[in-house]
Length: 127
Image 1 (tube, rainbow, N blue to C red):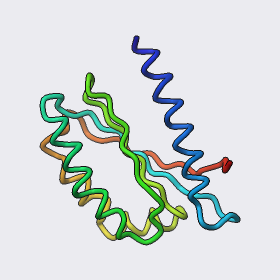
Image 2 (cartoon, rainbow, N blue to C red; image 1 turned 120 degrees about the vertical axis):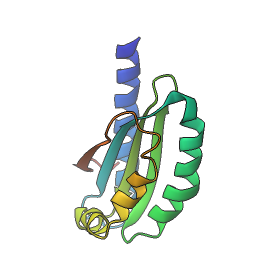
Image 3 (tube, one colour; image 1 turned 135 degrees about the vertical axis):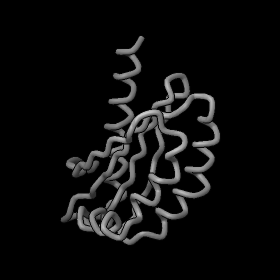
Image 4 (tube, rainbow, N blue to C red; image 1 turned 30 degrees about the horizontal axis):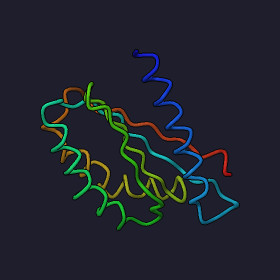
């Protein structure tokens, strides 16, 4: 069962990266994706998703280079993957240096059961 969930998550990630590629405004420059992988309390999962929708999404939209944002969730395990899409790596770095990224993560500190893991990726395929 666990391997089926992993396969589904991988397919969703690949599709998400393809979407990011189509959202990129500058065809000569690849889009950039920042993933934040979290493990949260199952009993407060709905509250966490609501906070993400009402607070993180509007804040992300105000950032330079914003292309889109996704939240992938597994309510049975409490795992979530946030994918923020940016026009460039420079835009993602700039919003991190400004404190924006840490400010968003801090909103969820009472929900987490483990430290969040952050990963960055270039969107390599645009279809």
